[in-house]
Length: 220
Ligand SMILES: N[C@@H](CCC(=O)N[C@@H](CS)C(=O)NCC(=O)O)C(=O)O
Image (cartoon, rainbow, N blue to C red; front, side):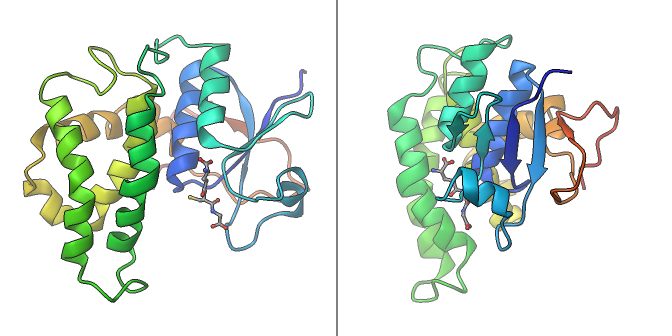
C-alpha cells in the first residue's frame, strides 16, 4: 500500500475546513490526524513548529503549513470540479477575508474576551465584507463566477462562523444571496463528508483515511 500524505486537522477550524474541502474535491486520500489545539501532539510540533492547523506532510517529507497552500497543492494535483478558475485565489477576497473580516469576526464571536465594545459594533464592522460578498453574489452565482471556485471554498468556513454567532439574526439579515450561497455549501454532500467526526489522534493509532469511506459519516 502506498503511503498517504498526513493531514493534521481540527474539525471546526475554518482554515482546516477549507483545506479538507479541497482535498476531498480533488479525490486525494490522506491520513487524518485530528488534534486538540490546547494539547498539540509532539509529532505536529516537530514537523511544523509554528503549530497551526492545517498541516499536510507529503510522503517525501515536504511540509505544507498554510491552508491556501494545501488547497493549491490538492487542486493542482487533481481538480475534477474545476475549482481552479482564473479567480481561484483572488487575492482581494482572500486577503480581506483572512485579514479584516477575520479580525472583526473574532471580536464578534468572542465578545467576552473583547468586552470594550458591544457585539453589535463588531458585527457592523464585519458586515462591510458581507455587503461586498452580497453585492457580488447578486450578479453572479458564485464568487468565482458562473461556477464555484476555490475562492468560494476559501471564504465559506469564515462566513459560516459569522452566521453561527447569532443564527436568529442571520436568518433575517439583509444578505439573502449570501445565505443561499452558504446554505448550498452547507447542504452539499462534500461538506457533510468533510465534517465527519474523527477521534483525537494518538500516536499508537492506525491510519484513519480521509475522506472516510463510511456511507454515513457521523457529523454531529
Ligand atoms: N495562516 C494559517 C492560519 C491557521 C490557523 O491560525 N489555525 C488555527 C486554528 S483555526 C490554529 O491552528 N491556531 C493555533 C492555536 O490555536 O494554537 C493557515 O491559513 O493555515
